[in-house]
Length: 610
Image 1 (cartoon, rainbow, N blue to C red):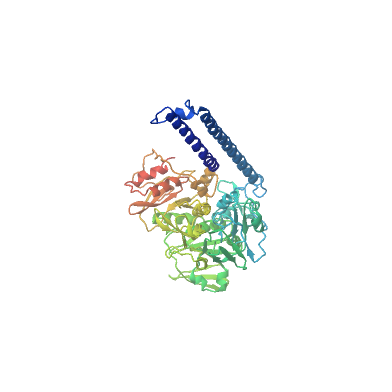
Image 2 (spheres, rainbow, N blue to C red):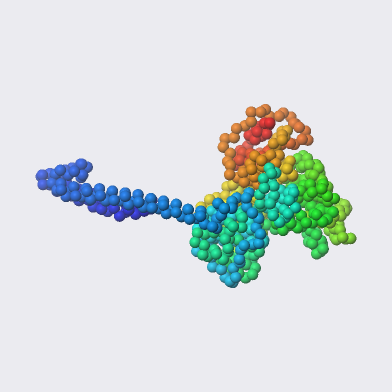
């Protein structure tokens, strides 16, 4: 299109000159006949039978030839551009770096990395190529490589810096499916079977997807490299540089901060001394999974402190293992029931009973007063006088966003929610974006928020990557999260799910297909946000089945929908053993309307259908 405009700019003056000459000849012809015509018919400009006909014909031929020549030139130019574009695509597709034909790059087929294939820069200063992007301090749980792949296809270079020793991976399986694997070498392979029986790796891409970090500067067609075992300790925003913990400096054009968060610990444990800290796990990374797996095979008792998502998932996973050994699994938390900060009380109590059936000893309303190491045991003293003896502690009491770079980078940290404050495009400052757990963004429906879930990491990382190339798209996505208490009980949630809010629950009797296992068999993936994120709700059709009247299936919450209300408007939804309906829930929150009868709204999820 641009070249066609250039051709027109060249030919237009010739056309205007020819037209002017034709009009002048026609005017002279009119004067020779003794009169001045009021207007010159358009036919006279082309045929000009009166005076100067031969000259007019020459000008007409000139204009016609020019137009025909311009059209031919434009056609050949466009055709040539198309051919060059296709050659470019063929060249990128055939590159050895992107082994999509030899080794599938999808997570379901990716192989676990062995020895790190990346050679770190040896010089004290690394100059990035002009178009390089540096997704700076990187949290492997934030799947930025999806965006990195898009950028690489645009011939851009991407460097991922992480203080972990492995390339980007998914965190959810660390507390879910990996614990149910029958493979004794699962801690090495990090491959697992989903509830539907299909096997996959936790890694987003195989090692062959990435190129050597030293080759980025000479990568003609772009590429993605991972610098493992390195930590960014300083950012020079004005100079577009970062400094690593080994004093290496790396320049960038644009930077994405995806530092995630750091697990919280209880102060009483931190003050308890080195021996207690050695026998306490703050569960977050691959190494934490490997360590806890080893501990669970060599001790007699493990106590999990925390009743949230992570604590409950680990409790159920270790509880299942306890049935095959003499391992005692204890879960304690300050709430009355499991998931007490999220679920309404009746459902929290029901969930607690399900967790107990998994072989877990529950200690509710437990506030830890002190922890000491005594007689080769850890003694946990509660404020109400109860004493718990155990061999190992897992502290699952929340996450603190990692904002260590805020000071050197001059970035604003939100005082209420923590994390780097970003605008609607996830931009913190010029040439700096933030995604994942560390981003505090503004939700147009629910206000400013910070979200710590896999789906949010996927979508925000992808959007930030697009915006780094100039897309300027706002973040409007309502992220979802999910949790499984084994293969039979699972739930998905979206929006603000806080047990302090008024709730309305609509339940029905569950069937054999209303389990996480059945959901993965239907979708083909254990990471359920992968199947939910790409779908949209379009005119959902309510179930024709009648709504239940009164209390149905008392104390039996097989499947259902829980609505969380604020000012009579639905701001959060939990789908309890109801799967593949998240687009509908997302649309209900997006609409932000009051509903007179939420039983009717629940029909949209078809929970009463067999």
